[in-house]
Image 1: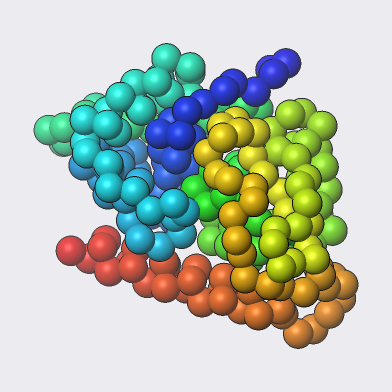
Image 2 (image 1 turned 120 degrees about the horizontal axis):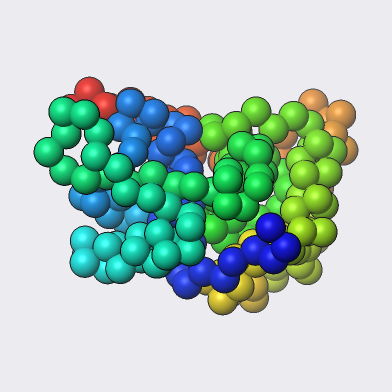
Length: 211
């Protein structure tokens, strides 16, 4: 496609959630309206936190369907309609790039180190250089752009452009050091925290699948 679509805040969050759940909890995907609402409002891997009603989520998913980014399905044996994303086909992005884009839509501007660590739960991303290459290709296509470091930081960040006003770029952040060399054996503190958050998220998803 020649130009990425523009999404409002609800649509961007929901598109990110649909891809995330497809990759992390495939047994529960596609998602019912109730599950999609819970995914949008969950407390981990989300910024900002939300408390949307199912009615708000229904408006958002309807907008995604109108833009060709989501569809409605009726799985065999299910008594409720469910929703899936069409991001691969509509945006012409592979799973690695969709994982990065979804993470930015659900959590806001991040350094390449943060992005790589947090999006690994959704796709195999390779080295930091490989992630930077994917981000550069996405930037050329108008999906993301590089932005200045946040307050108290020296590390450049990346932001998604499907919903440009979704996250404030001048939001205060914890100070982090500059990006490490890809060959560095010791991960930075922000990466270690992100790894722990991703592990907690996987455990929470596993527990929900058992209930």
